Image (cartoon, rainbow, N blue to C red; front, side, top):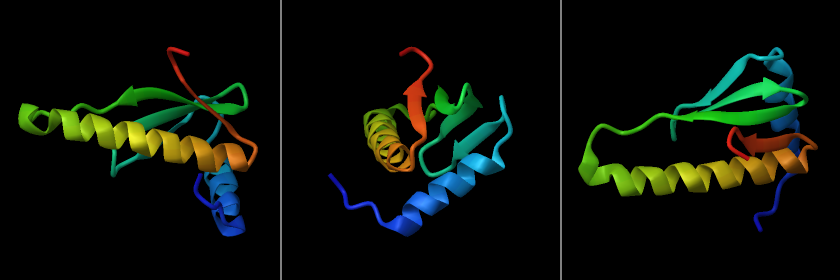
Length: 85
């Protein structure tokens, strides 16, 4: 488990507060799109990569980024889930 610094927790809280209910928050580096609903962020879309040669690496990056985001936001008291969970 990564050490989560207080400033990261504050950043997560600030990002969450910027988004209105049913609004979206996107992570450009990994193509993850979350929607704020029912007091949590729900992963609603993973932008695919068109180049099939890099598809596995891209999907691995998305999963790793999701887990990191989940760890940090939940340390800030914000639930992160996937739409299909």
